[in-house]
Image 1 (cartoon, rainbow, N blue to C red):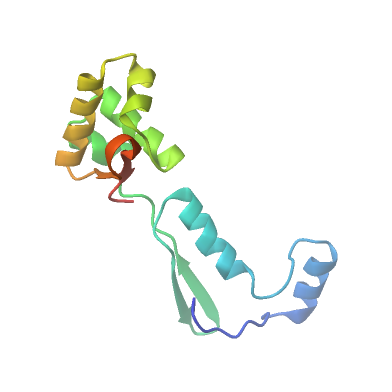
Image 2: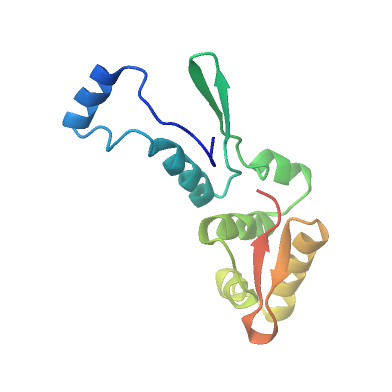
Length: 136
């Protein structure tokens, strides 16, 4: 579906009316928008499946739900770090230090625990080190 598809509306009259009232832009752009939205939201790309005359789109929520993270035994600060990375796509030790008003050693211990749990990974080198989620 994402690589090769033939776009056509199932009801051309309704599609034309929606186009006139600017509810849709054109036929065939929706699947690409859905894929981009999922990327923006930090979740896996959706699965597209043709089922008879219908298209079924399966969008999976993030694995990193509050319930899942709480069951791992994360404390409030570690949960907040995960939320910050979800929102900003990445974080640094310096940002964690500012967020919690702690020294580098404390910030790095929070980050190390999240790395050990395989929730985040360290990227970059030297002063350009940052942390991203490993799971979505």
